[in-house]
Image (cartoon, rainbow, N blue to C red):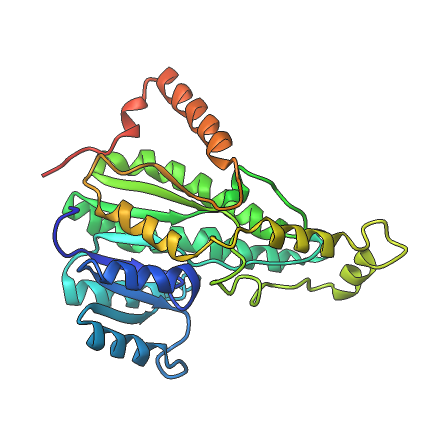
Length: 303
């Protein structure tokens, strides 16, 4: 599967990791469909991608892909199948962040964050997996977060909870899809405060009054939001180039079946996620071995 042109869908491709990943994969000769939230009528990104493809002589195409909308997902997948007859790789990159005291976010906001960061991945999987099973091969790449097994910092509660759910979902999909020759690979970025628009577009609390009260004197939580934001910025290395995440995805996609890493860490912040996540994965493997189903941990080669 790793050889030749692959048909690839990248979600959340309008900016940040997603936009960089689209171009990086296309430069390797793959046909890449950039999933964009906006419609062609309201966004210039489609024309920009078309122009980029012409200038660079690569295969890149924008497709509207709102991963919270089943009809939109169905239309996007049909576009790819109609043109290529297959879907080799899906990069689950779409995400939405938040900032503020967890208590001040509404239940509806929690649902929205969970939809974008986790449930949307499941929606898209349901649309593409029948084609991957038919082909006896495929690859799901999940862009997780160092927060899942690293420092669970304050004021990002809904986002961190959703990313943890996504990581857990990826683990379950791994063992259920391996028998079909469909691989799972999780990318774990550390802290990146430039090159993405996570903070610029972050969701803010629905209960703005409560958030203000919690973060202002005489509240004992007052000021800690500024300290946390500064600490995050200071923890980020000047070498933390988001292109490294895109490059890591390209490397995973380029490997042969059976040689792809389950997790790839892209950290410039002295993160120790590889230690905690590695311990978790070891315990998981031990339990699956105890249950006698460790054979599900390796993707089967099917013809």
